[in-house]
Image (cartoon, rainbow, N blue to C red; front, side, top):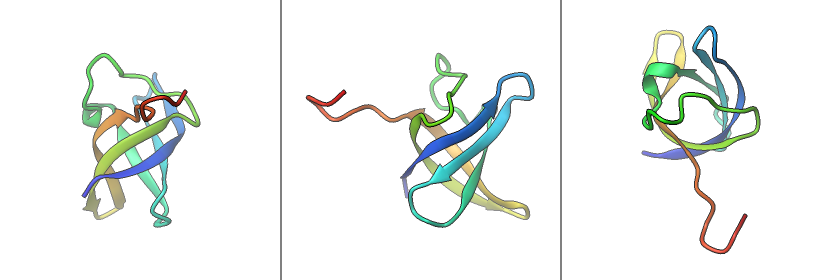
Length: 75
């Protein structure tokens, strides 16, 4: 199931960060290898994203992460 959230932080040097999920179930780990769009390998804090999740022994991990595109007519 795909959910949305906002990037809390992403360290381009360490290549990981966290997303604050909109589903209310806490933060989700983001690793650069799970970014779906190869041209979007960096995320800014507060940037809206869409993703799926997988449960790991350490908590949720974001999969197939991509930037959220605004609805038509919105900026």
